[in-house]
Length: 335
Image (cartoon, rainbow, N blue to C red):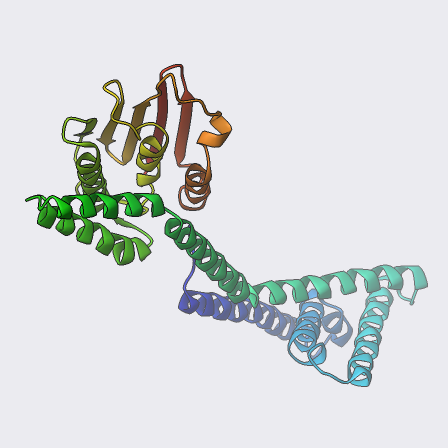
């Protein structure tokens, strides 16, 4: 999302005030050279003088009057401001009609009031650019904090299962124990260090999923039907950390918690240009009875919130609960 830096905001504010006051000053000098000293009345009722008065009043209102704490000070200036505008309106009516007409003077008066507050509005919003920028920064920081909170709510059951698997290996004095500890250590480092960043390399995210699957295979056995297929080049691409693992977790949590010969989890990753298609399918055994609403629990709910924060209008999530198959398909524009 486009956002100006504080330095750019200051430069824009300076440019606005310099250009705004320069135009008014140039018009005022131009009229003075043309009309003075021969035609004072025409000069005083010219648009150049009017705009100069409106600008002075607007600047005083913004920088001095409205910020003053004392009410009498504000009231005195507003009364003086009204008197000056009335005088200008009366002079213009006299120059044009040869006499001061109440109706014409009032029309000029309301026109002058409107132009003064238009100038004040321009000054006000030019000086509020930094506040808008500050609001955008706070919004970004809030979204980032939300994303981190949602990421920290992931994978508690996986870690519990992983430590149980590691405990079982240690009891058997398995040769796989050191490698499993190393994999789990790498995953923990990714969870605690890399995942706090707003974006990570796609290769790191995919490696985390590969290690996740490796540990699940230790849990269920190498004969377990768990596959991961990656097509395309993940190099030089970045992604929100832990955005893909939620679908993998969901498959194991709700579909592959048994060693039944029909059980399977199939994960396919297709990478093309700036798009990634992440497809997870898992078996649904006849004895598994659950509602789709229960299936789409906290993990998928968090995923939807994170996608909305990180990839608004740049993602597509499809969840299909078929007879013997559950499909989760996520497409993200990484650009």
